Length: 478
Image (tube, rainbow, N blue to C red):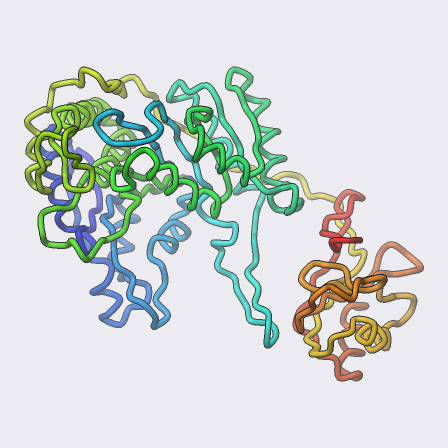
């Protein structure tokens, strides 16, 4: 018997959770439940995180969390509980299977069967944002080697466990050569450890186009957080309905399982919501805790129910469906099909799946890091970068010279184009003319000089050479 934590959430959450638990009970799942309250009522009660300390304690004790959708109130500084939970519990892998159910669910892609493995903790979802000038805000994109290694290895191990043949990586490293470049580099390194599994890399824009047009070309796709968030919803929708998809969030200690859709308050308490997304999250949970035979039984019963034409309103189609049912009735139909398998749809077989056990990340030996310059970001409301260069040159000293000014990443000095539109946010790069290496005290002196010259510096970024190689972006056009 496994004790898990459940949360019924908001909107349609309580209805689809009750339906899911009813199916699991009828199938013989060996589960005990601790229910917690999260979401809208907790937010509106004055807790901006949407969850109490006591609820966290229960989740961490049980290690397994089955969560229905929640509503995050607009405004008021409320934090996304989904993002918070993934980060606090170290749920680094988001796994979303997307399978077509042709001809029982309408789709333009009848043979689609892919799994998207999304990095879940970092990237732009670090949520580190600042307004720096009147006209410019920034969001930091953080990609770490541990984050890349864990998610890429998980993707290959998942493919191995599920007997899948190929893992594809999506990045945009033709533009973001440092961040997405690291993700791609780690993918290539780890792929060599799995010679039995085909591997490939696509730039995310053309990869997304191929996914939307020819999804049968892909099997398992691994990608950084933002791309994975967007493309997993697209992939789920083109199978026929985003409401059918479940999601697993896997960490080294804990795991959370959910539907990928929202709380849909407009159809709440009407007994019309499709519980399939949360039910699929629960199936992934059963596999995770070693109750694969129950997961197999429920999944095949669900497939048989779709084949029987018993559909909720979101996938009901005149002429193809046979009976439109509500949430409770759909759950009862799945229960009536327990022990049966589909005739046309491919039945599933989970019983022999071995659990995925990944090694904990081991920190690599330290790299040689040399400070070779500094980017000083300046708030200046003028228009001509040549004028700014003359002002900023006043803070030069001891051979540390202004070498470049960029605006929104485009080099505008020296030899900029007058046609380039500039905001009030300028990156001024300083490097030493005399030696390759500078000292951190030199940066302090530069900033002190800027104060004396009444230059509004808003941030600095140190420029490093790592193992002798430049480890920072150049200005476009340089």
